[in-house]
Length: 167
Image 1: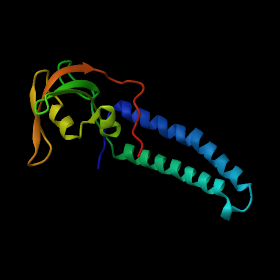
Image 2: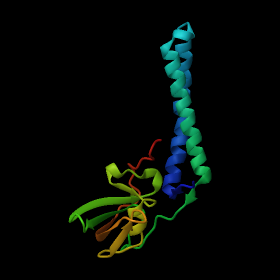
Image 3: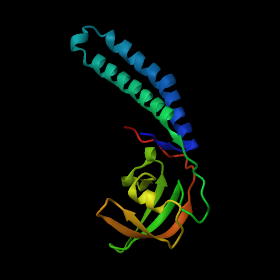
Image 4: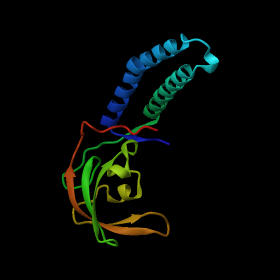
């Protein structure tokens, strides 16, 4: 699978990799050394916990590096009147007569609980490129779908507090 990433996503991933290699790795190696010095390793919980955390950090580094190698870079620019990546969109759900607000993001930042909808999701695919007042059909699967109306689009590019989702 190829993750779609923006240039901003790539920069944030590279920053995380660098931080994990330079800062976190050094701290965890020191923790392992310190725990090892406490004696019998077979019953040393601190040593096993430190090793586990060190391995988790190395796995995260490998995961992020693999993600960058296989990523497809997508442009996050869009016209002011069209839904694009990093835009906040107010949607009216016809069936429920409810209005909800989402931000359209790349798949690595998607978090529906936090209102961040991936461009890979059914709703993200459906609304991408549409304009205010467009009535859009969101196809969930072959048998299920629903209509939404785009009420408002707000350009919210490159917020500094965006986090790449951990796995």
